[in-house]
Structures are given as C-alpha cells and as structure tokens.
Amino acid sequence: MRCFKLIKKYKKQIFFATLMLVLLCVVSYFIYHNFSTSTISCTLNREYENYKTQIVVHFNKDNTLSIEETFETGDNAILKTKRIEATLLEYDYSVLKNKIIVKHNQTYSKDEKEMVKEYVESGYSCTNEETVDKNIEYNLSNYSTYQEVGTPYEEVEINAFSDDKDLREKVLIDNNNFDPEVAGIYVVTYRMSLSDVRDEYLYRVIHVEDTTPPTLKLKGQEEITLKKGDKYTEEGVDVSDNYDKEIKNKVETEGEVDTSKLGEYEIVYEVTDSAGNTSTVSRKVKVTSKGGIIPEIKTENGITYVNGTLIANKQYSLPENYAPGLRDDVYNAFKTLQQDAKKQKYSIEILSGYRSYSYQEKLYNDYVKKYGKEKADTFSAQPGHSEHQSGLALDVGKLDESYGNTNEGKWLAANAYKYGFIIRYPKGKENITGYAYEPWHIRYLGKELAQKVYKSGLTLEEYFGIEE
Image 1 (cartoon, rainbow, N blue to C red):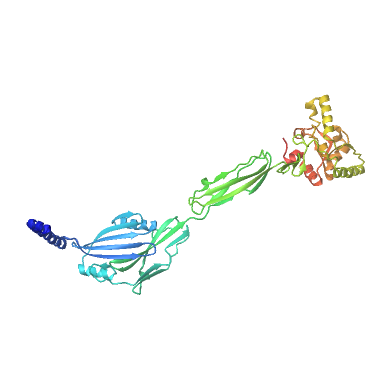
Image 2 (image 1 turned 45 degrees about the vertical axis):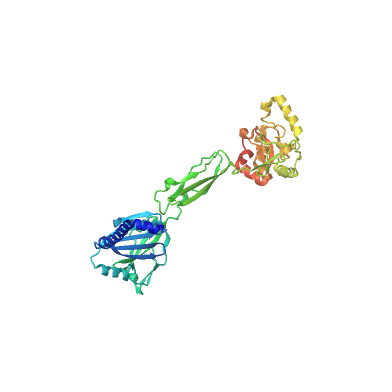
C-alpha cells in the first residue's frame, strides 16, 4: 500500500524519468547505426608448433580495415622476428612477455560485402556470416635445429596443402638474414599465400653455434727432462680456432719450473674461445739430479734410503743401535776384486771394515782432541754418520792420498765398479761429499748402480741429487 502511495505521489517524476530513458536508448541506437566507425568484424585463430595467433579485422565506415593481431610464442627469436617485421612495416605494436600485439589500418576499394565474402571464404569467422572451413595442412619436418658454425644450411621438408591443393612450390622462404659463418640465432620464415586476405606463416629457428674447442698444440716436447741447475726455456703453444680469429692472447699458462729443486713440474696451457669452448694441454718437466735421478727419500727404523740405497753421510745418519757388521755380499764382492787384482800383481788388503757407533764415537773424539773439530770433520765422520757403521764400506790398500797415484790405486779406481764398488770420496769433490780425498775408501752399491755412478763421473750425492 505504501509503494502505491509513493508511485501516486511521484507519478509525474517517474513518467518523465521513464521518458528520458527511452529517449536515451533511441538516441544511442541512432548514433550507433549512423556514426559508428565499425560495422563488421572478422576473426581468425590459428595455432602452430611454436606460436599461436589471433587476427581481428574491423570494417570501418571510411572504407578502411582496422587489423589487430595478437601473436604469442615461447621462442624469443620468433618474437624478435615479429617485432622487427612490425617495425619495418611501420605498424604500431606492443610487447608483453611472450606476446606481441600488432595494429595497423588498411584501405579497401571493393564493396564491403564483397570484402567480407573474401574473408569468409578464406576461413575467417565474420559477424552474421557462415564460416567456410578450409582444410589446411601446413607444417615442417622440424621447427628448430642446431648446426655448427661454418656448415651449410640444409632445408627441411615442407608440407603445404589447402583443400587438397599442393601449394609447396608457392611457399616463399625468407632466409636472407641467415649466415652460417656467424654464430647466432636465426629465424627462417615460410609464407604460404591462401588468398589476397590470408597468409599462413611457419617459423623455423636455427641456432648456429660454435661448439668446436680451439686447437692447442705444444711447441717442443711434451715431456722434458732437465738436470738440476739447467735453464728452462718456455716454448709455449700454437693455438687456432675455427671461429675466433684472434685467440693467441687468450692463452693462460699455469705452473712454473724451478730447476734449482729436483722434482716433476707441470705447465698447463688453457684457452677459451668466445663461445666458451675450452682446450687444455700440459707439458711435464722433470728436474733430475746430475745422474738423471729424482730422489725418493724414505726413512725406515731411523735408516735413510734414497731410491732404495742406504745413505750415511753428513746429512743422513744411522741409529746408534744399528749394527749389521760387515755384510757378506760386500765381503764376497771384495774377495773377487782382491783375487783379480792379485792376477795383475796388486795386493789390496782390507785396512778397516765395519765400525760400530761407539767405536766411531771414540775415534772421532780422539781426532777432535788432536786436530780440533773443524779439521776433524774434514776427514772423520761423526758417530752415526760413518759409512763403516752401515757394513757397506771398506778402507783398503793404504791410508794416504798418494795411494791414488800408485798403479794399484789407479787400478782400483778404474775397476772397482766392476765388482760393485765406487771410490766414495773422489778428488776435487770435497765441497760436495764434505770429506777430503780418500782413494782408499770404497763403498759397495752393487754392480749395476756402481757402474752407473762410475760412468757418470759423479759422487753418490750428485748422482742422487742429495748434495746439501
């Protein structure tokens, strides 16, 4: 009741409001049909292997078409190609993530109905018109490929059919920007024209890559052996690359050689090209003793062995409790030497053989009291440092430097190695052995090693590279 009272009270206002609303609708309808710039729109949706697109065409009253294409792809190279194309055609476009929206206007001279018919027959869905389905088969055997820079381009198989008409020969291929000699990402465009108002596009992405590492070759030898103190000359490497022209300055060298220290060194050469391909080569340099040895020093129970040979000298000592006595193999080898010397009319006798730690200690202390420590150290070993304690050394013939000038002493120096012995403290090597010349002191090494040391002309310290 209250509602009816309100209507009765405001009936004039309601009447005029209703009249104005009707009038507004009439005016809006009139404006829409007489002043609207677009009367018909046509839409085409297509989806291919690596993109999808929607094209919307508006027919305007001024005989122009407003065309808007929304192009979507997950491949940045294709998106870039589409953007370049829009730029060259001077179309308006905007890019949002993986989409590009391209807009442009086009003037048409044909009748609007005739134009709409063309769009419908080309497969567009147009306002108030029945869509004509077109049987289209358009694809490539592959849409993305990788190839090494410098290799020729190979075309792929194309299928291009519309309503069972073979259009393969009419497909226009645009690969003008493709350069197999330059690494990069290229897009080849395949255009199939179905009518004046419809073209279908395929895009093939080609990744031209440099996956070949540079060629790195050593100058000189791969392995070099130097004697201690020799000069090492860095010969470097030759380098080339299938793509980068200037690459020599990119070679990095790691490692160095110190010929004052024995050991094995490695020089590593590495180069990386602009594509990130890396090549590495290395050179090994051995710095050996003058005897060609890289010493391996081991200590067992307080006894030092260099490459398996027991060493007792000023640097390396023997334990106080080490007491092997004169070894049988040493004594037997000397007896053979003695017998052969006798055949040459030489009588070579043992003057001193094995000495214990305590005996050497008493002997050394007596020399110190008599000559002083500095003088004693030039001809007598401190306890634990005497080769006599090792059971491998003998004093023979005569304890006099002149013994080396006798025929007997000369024979011993020239032939001792044949029996496994060397003259342990040769003349002119005092600064290396630490002891004065002793032509009577022989050390047993075994025939093979004794021969090598003798022919090298080196002391045992020099041969093994353990001189201080």
